[in-house]
Image (cartoon, rainbow, N blue to C red; front, side, top):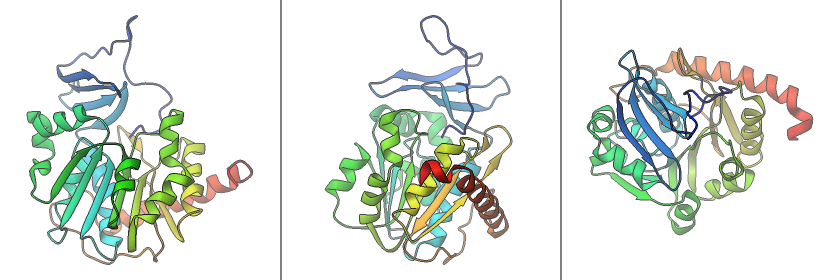
Length: 282
């Protein structure tokens, strides 16, 4: 979740080592990325991947409630859920608030992200130890491979990938990938996508257009955070996008009014950017 800032957040030295002023809680260079969990000067905790901000602890609930809960209240069923990406476990924390959900698969490419989320005391506390819920299955594997090997459809699929800052990540925002996701949705199922901030205009509108080429119904929505900025998200389905169940208990941000406001802002941003970039993304 890199919300459209044009610069990496933290300074670098000559060896390209991330420098922070607070305590580093966890740092690991893996074959996939460099993970850094650290305490900010104000006592908040941030997670970066390759120096790009992923979450800021005072605000992450806004992002994760929005990404996870909105599709859950829209989908016709929520028996079977898959989260692609999101290895920090915070989207899982929101999913397990629904008692009627029967099973959820967290699919994360980097095993070290899973280890940090599962074992680090701060992350276990922040996620309310959601990865230990009996309904959760955690898999360290490529999202496309996971979908190819699973024949039983999902009611909700969450695509919680970093922004498409390189060609490898861009493939996870393509029409081809969304077509594969659609093939694994149950009738009435919903996909939710972290789709870049509207301030990353071309990324946002490209995701919008690519989803619209595959799904009959697509709605953008934009949760706003004081520090992290505005996130761009989408729900897509081949069934009408309407609320079908109540919000669960334990939410700190999301309710009917905040959801309506996010959809209103997202619709306005989407319309403006579609008009601006129509010739490029058509």
